[in-house]
Length: 74
Image 1 (tube, rainbow, N blue to C red):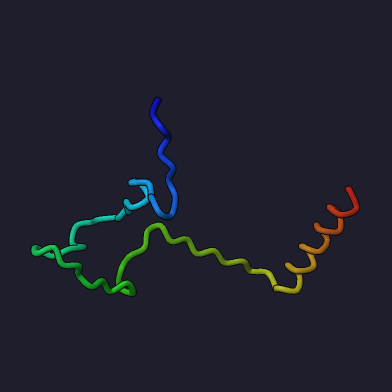
Image 2 (tube, helix red, strand yellow; image 1 turned 45 degrees about the horizontal axis):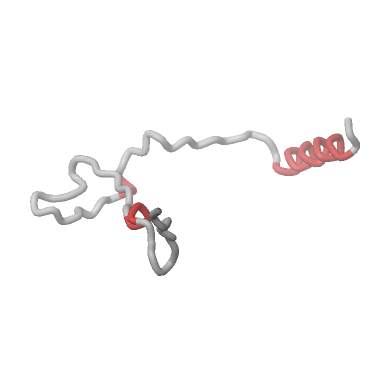
């Protein structure tokens, strides 16, 4: 019968030491050194900016109305 291995702080699991990294073309130079990136000049296709043309006071009042209905069981 084999004893079960107990993973913990004194005996970490091998998978706990592994890290995930996103790599793209141009991230590293030909020597494997990380290149500096000008984040302000980068296009961010996954970024979504939402704007709501509603005064904050009216939006807050609407939230309180919904909460009152929820708390009253409507």
